[in-house]
Image 1 (cartoon, rainbow, N blue to C red):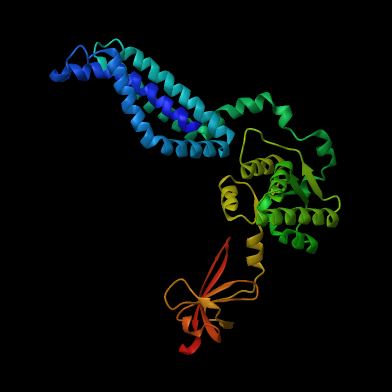
Image 2: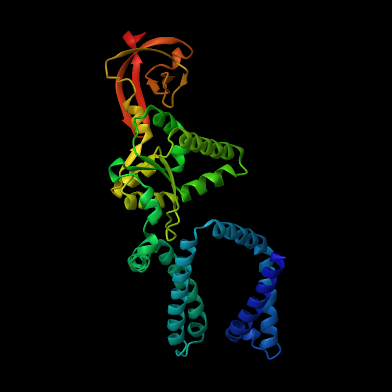
Length: 366
């Protein structure tokens, strides 16, 4: 059906183009300057025929492109589409005004082609500017919006009354740290104090993952819900689900940071990227991976270790081994020892929020 519509549109566009431009082409070619040829009916039919032939070549490509575009638009965040559309409308208005001014020029090609070209170019530029500058425009609109809805954005008085004193602190859990599950074990040890806060938008994202058609995602989502249930039973009265929401923000991570700022709490995560973004926004963050690295046994250059080489590494002649806690050991010239237990000497240690990696070489040139 879509292919037929495109072919009809090609016919209409071809007829219009033939009606407008072909008479000028006929005048430029003396042998075609004939009353039987150079008339509106012939121009319209020729233009429609040429564009119909083009539609046979490009219709399938256009159908695939439109289906691809439809999928992208359906998955794009609403604010992106909104500001992109506003930019597109502004671009088309500017193109119309310029085209109206050019229509007064007595040059046929300029008066007819220029408005079309301007509409395409300025419309595209307007959409891109609106799409790329959405955060800045949101920033311009947010202050007045906050001023008008100050009471709406305050924490509900009943929730405030139920909250413990501020000194206990709030730990806002993100989706990744809930699914990871280690937070429950840390909580059971009593090392993490305060109230665990699970915003409703995080719980909704977790439920969405648990309802996914993908088996792996569904398993991860259900594991996260089980972890929350365990936390709720073990930390009685210390788990709070807040209805706080920031409708002007689409991303869950950004909502979480705003909630942490508003409540004066800390974001608990094991997401490396969210960790960095929180630091950029001056939001306190607790990274479970940092905690795991901190309690691992300290390894220093020059220390000897006994490991089993499991597989080859990315670089030539490298071997890879693992400690009991999952730390990767990259062994220089260790490829030939795959499957063997050997003694190695630590040469360096690389430690980041994403994990720890140890570099070593066989001891004594074994």
